[in-house]
Length: 171
Image (cartoon, rainbow, N blue to C red; front, side):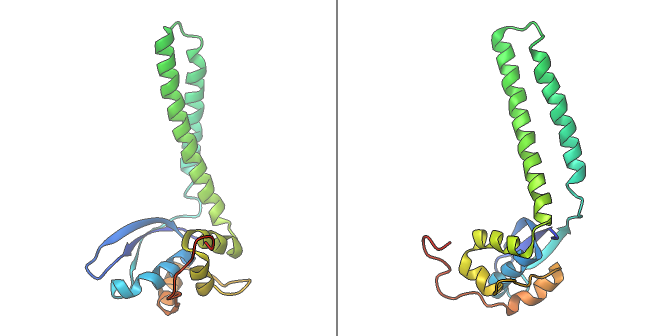
């Protein structure tokens, strides 16, 4: 599945927000929701991500994690006061946790690229609500747009529910 960073125009004045790592199906939903308020196409594609965009950062992060783990291990062999050792261990541990979180986010993006249509629709249901997504992508095997251009073109034609989008417990 393709991913991109987009600018979503919220109104006719030009207020916009950056939305990262969206799929064509998500763009279709955003266009259908916002085209009336934006006075036309509300989406500007900032950049489309390459299929292997996460590979290089993952390699760099793996190297950084290995370096910090070795540094943490070497602290045990240094002759340091206990409070100094604990501060350094805490600092390195925090850095390691931060890097591991970044690795997890990048691996999730890699996994999202391999989502089936059903998995993508389930993700969108969790994010935007069952009624809205079911209305945009009906049926057991929904057809999702393959490209961002297709999503932008078809988006205004998709009708979203006018009633309450969901009630408590029906998300």
